[in-house]
Length: 172
Image 1 (cartoon, rainbow, N blue to C red):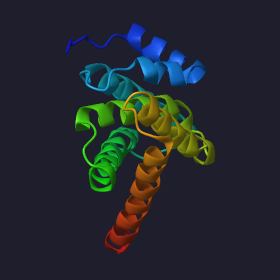
Image 2 (tube, rainbow, N blue to C red):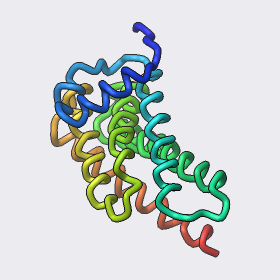
Image 3 (cartoon, rainbow, N blue to C red):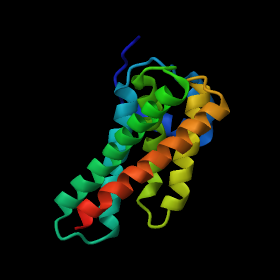
Image 4 (cartoon, helix red, strand yellow):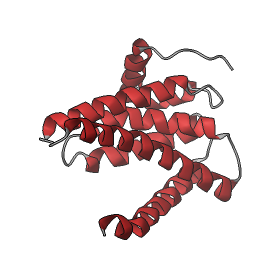
């Protein structure tokens, strides 16, 4: 496995390919590659998401709010990838390592975060992200459509139940 550094050029070319030819992008992305580049895409997009989110509203402590936006963008991607990976292992067995799974989630989240800060765009960006994740699973990890759909539906359900169960502790 060749480790290639993350560059801003890679960021822009990846975002462009994910927007224009996502199937080709994921087909060419190796399942066992390193995750420096996908992590870089996720971090840059999360930073842009945080700045864009701050520009829309007036936070009393913009530094803290920006950190919350950034941590939420990165953290939710890691949580979703972890739950998806666990679902895959339980549902169809271990078909790939976590690295391959994280790469897909990071790239899908990285491109959708660029529009997710716009109010009410969540209704567009969230299904779009899961669609990209499904394409990544079928093209990069060679899942069947049925397997990818099963992993996505079950992991979303588990995530909803998880957050609904901890919401009363946070809201109290």
